[in-house]
Amino acid sequence: MSELNSEQVKANLLENAKQSIQLGVEDYTLAKYDHKRNISAVRNIFAGLLLLYKYKLMEISPKNNPYQYIQWGRKQRPDGLPEQTLNVRGILVKFKNFNILVNGKKIGEIQSFRNNIEHFYNVDDVDILPLIFHSFDLIENFYENYLICHEQKSLKEFLGWKTYKVLSECK
Image (tube, rainbow, N blue to C red; front, top):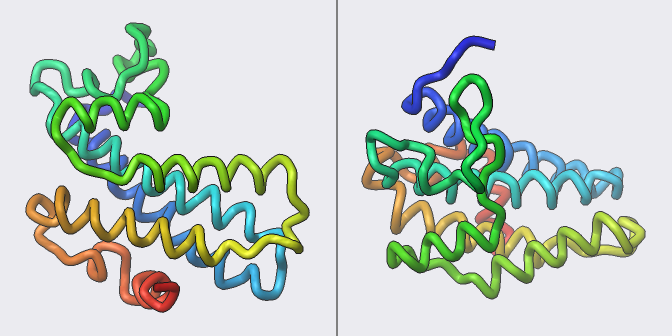
């Protein structure tokens, strides 16, 4: 694998966030016919949200150390990328330090829901609509408050009209 510069990594984070959210919404739509898709819908949407958060942390990291705010520990891979990145708790701590306001309680509830659906519940018995609603609320608020000024496009343009339409109908 070739080395990536930090701008490429940042662009990849944002693209991966978008694709994760899009896949999660696609899985949510398909879950009406196949309940096993509930798990991947929950995983993908939550992963997309966390990737948006990490993108923002990279965006505000010092130019001479672009991974400083997403890196967990000091170990780096041979290509210079962090060995591990922050978990949810670490992201929330960094956000608090930088006065980036997100609803940590809601994020924790979504994470708990995701863990529970992955480990304990039969997916046929789980309604993921509340998770989709809360996730979209977090995504929309974060994008509108912290990313739109850099991306120069609306959330609808960023996610695509089809994904945005499904998410907005969950409200």
